[in-house]
Length: 497
Image (cartoon, rainbow, N blue to C red; front, side, top):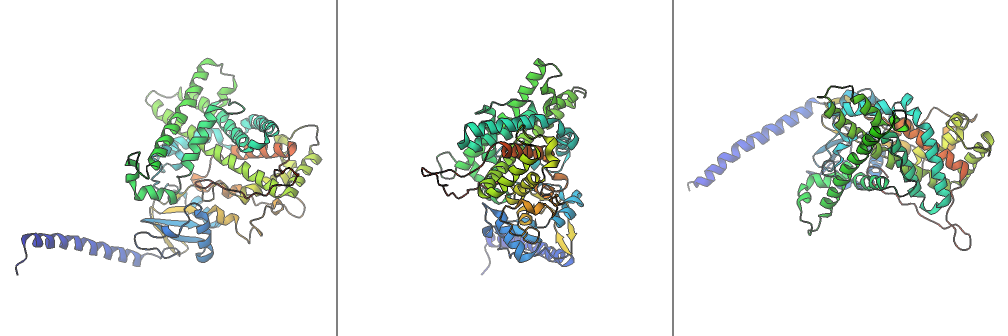
């Protein structure tokens, strides 16, 4: 029987396709044969990889379990994406710090653009735009520059404890007001209301929506099913599209409104007022000296650096203070010891200041242990490789997502025995002096993409913690008989917890 014309055309079409597939497969096998093996890891399924095995709400728990099984460097495949999980501070320093030229990029996150978070330069690719934003950011938040914000941070910390005393039940709101008021003051010179400030509420809503979906593990849903953004409003599954639109509108408003506030108040204020010390005000003054062609590019970078600063600092500081409060309630002996140190060194006639910090090593240990006990960014922000690399005999491919599993470091039983317990003493030696182990060295990330605002964040946390310890006592709620009410802590999950 002679094949039909359509059959012959089909055969002719299949032949070149088959040739391409076989050739590509042969090259893949040849490349793998000529390269070192990938790091060890769980066996991926065809097409899906390891995505079904990952706890998408708390992926750090899955990666830490694989750390125990496969070691400090683990290979994972999330659908078609190569991922390398770093479970060791030593490896992180070697790769992210010493080979930062290769490991400073960011992976594609499908939720970034739809949710309006592309303005956040923390998620930008490693390019000239990122460098412009980072340069502006660094000028304000480098150690010697961040010192000038300390009086304001201490003042805001004292306002926070007044709110705690007046209205102890809404402690989360008071922590959030403190965090956002510091950020708004540093970045825009904006003085927030003590409670229910509209910009603070906007910042909280934008953060809540975006942070929940900015992880690789959650963004994979939109990457796999991009049509979810086109579903009609009445259709099941359209909530993602609605959330994305709300988030985009919120981030646009957050980027423009406080920026315009600063511009307006610069025009109305004298150059000696407090506003001139803000990041945006100082940057706008520098912009005036640039040529006209450069100004729009600089202003765009400034807006992105500014909105990144307030989003990046507010939720992280608030979450850390929540962990601190939980620790003080759960481990009252640590709270009493810290308060006794403050009373012994400072007395009860005044409140602590930054000049007292070196004299309060146990309070410092409480801060360090808070950072370690419940790290608010258990996986940080993922990196991506810009070229192939080899480490310890293992091949790390170009374009791989690189995940820094900070949670695994904090749960290293050799380094931190009884790691699930809150023990500030672990950061003090037999003589009561601080050790060299400071979780801030890994909590804030590593390499060129490490948090540039860590010094201002550290000062905010210390001012809030030491002021709270000196003035209030954290304890469980009591029932009508005066007995403590048992509770189970609940953590939100996403980019932060």
